[in-house]
Image (cartoon, rainbow, N blue to C red):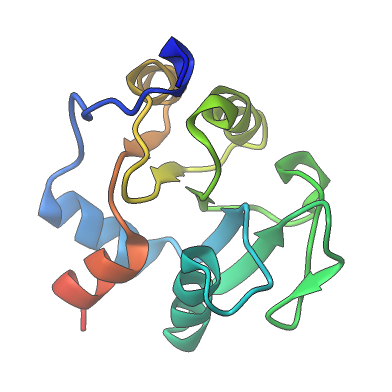
Length: 146
């Protein structure tokens, strides 16, 4: 791995109460890197979120539809307001995704379990977004709301 691809340990994350509040109040989720393969984590998480009332918007330029939802090539192509940008991409893609999340005025950038990029998280926070690193939405939902 190059220096930019090494996994960091998150310097900070919201509290459990703050995460619970996000999960209860922000329901439109763009899943960046959503796979159409049922065995992939992104697919399982997105399916779970849909089953629990979230609006899931797939972001995958290689697919036109995933989980019965229209897929978009990037965040900027999505016509509706996005609350949470849930990232399932390599570490080196995170800075660009965070820039797009800021541009579309998302409320939360959520880096999935195993993904942390402190510089991008700080940039998101400075732009007024909440940044969550190395946590899984499905696990957090099951722990805090189920």
